[in-house]
Image (tube, rainbow, N blue to C red; front, side, top):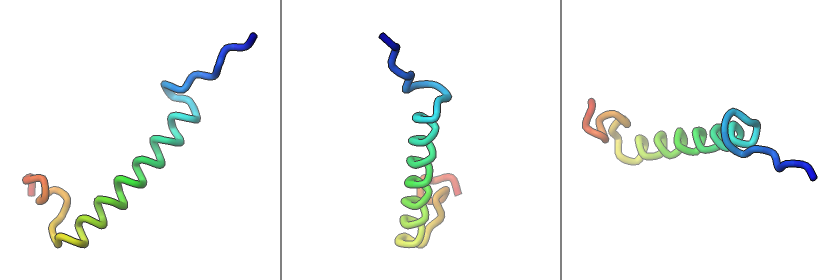
Length: 47
């Protein structure tokens, strides 16, 4: 039998999902900034 491919670490599967979630977070951050009129840093109290 062959061992299943790893899903953790620096493998293509993990990097693909990391990229997708990063893009989603970026779009959500931009949308929130457009709706509130405040930058991301000012929303969390750093700006």
